[in-house]
Length: 66
Image 1 (cartoon, rainbow, N blue to C red):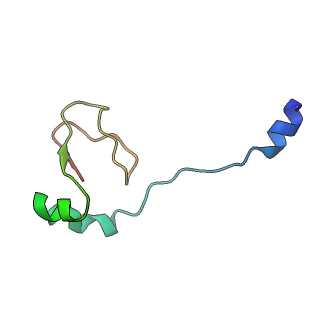
Image 2: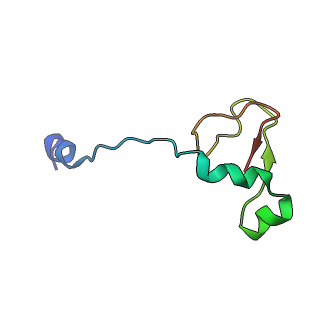
Image 3: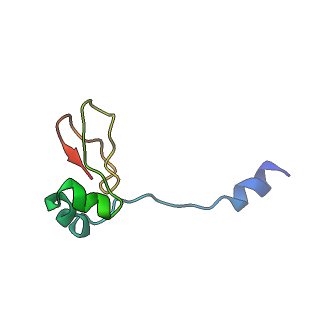
């Protein structure tokens, strides 16, 4: 395969954050209710260590993520 053949087969895409509104109610749930939904709450304890899966931004230390 030549480079031009491979290059023509490459798909273009863009990664975008999700709308936060559907996820906001999860933050009001206790840990048992989250577990019933297959989710867990975590608190970021270091910078750049916990990416938010909704906003695609790194959480700040002390910030809660679900």
